[in-house]
Length: 102
Image 1 (cartoon, rainbow, N blue to C red):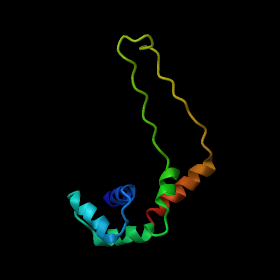
Image 2 (image 1 turned 30 degrees about the vertical axis):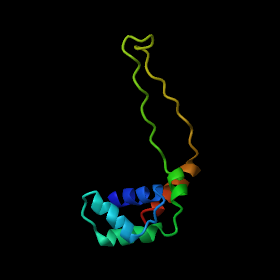
Image 3 (image 1 turned 60 degrees about the horizontal axis):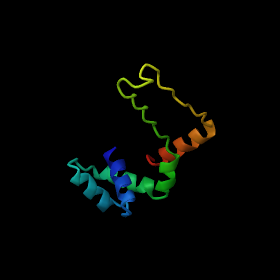
Image 4 (image 1 turned 90 degrees about the vertical axis):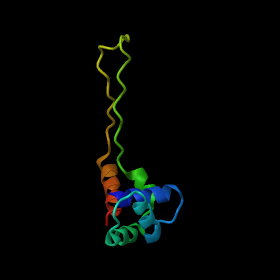
């Protein structure tokens, strides 16, 4: 997973996602570098538009903050808004995400 994070970091910083840069970032994190995984990830990302893959990836929604103690609706349960997701969009997002892993 650290290799994917390193690739995302490099992309965010507008650096080329290549073997040398990926190895440098992973080494800087203190993790041991597996050259086979680095090569595999670089090859898998060669034809991937990372911006589109990130946009298509499902995002976890943060839980609503608890109301302040003694607030007017402190006893009222938090209402959650649920969006109906199109299964086709979810499948497309998973395909884009799976392409990151080969």
